[in-house]
Image (cartoon, rainbow, N blue to C red):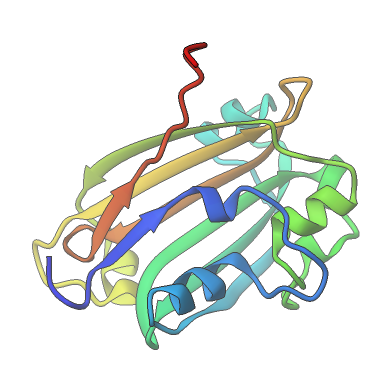
Length: 184
């Protein structure tokens, strides 16, 4: 991996932030001596793609709220993320708009009474479509990683689905798992 690569862990993005703290992406990048910003490319109601509908427990084509963000690392495209929410949670909130959300979406969800208790992530590799290649500035033939994350609340109700696309050669995904094996 080159010096322009990025090591990503999921944990900072799964918990709400304290009042006055910035978003997790900016803080994570700064901790690694980098500059992390994002641009909201779109926010609003759309028909749920089939996979998103299934993960949210909705009928295919049912309306959801989506926020599409271009995630930048040192002003260079690092990933495109589409975050989907059921309309019962997001309609009429900051999740449905293009304004920056203080502390990020997870913080707003917690303030609205929707706290994640379980997260499932699936990662695949693929070739980008033309729009992804252009947005992420990948080289011809350069693969991307696709990470799909579903967040469930304490009652196993899905509250959020994230679909991320990242240039594979610039990424390293790191998973840290705490194990309580009863020893000690």
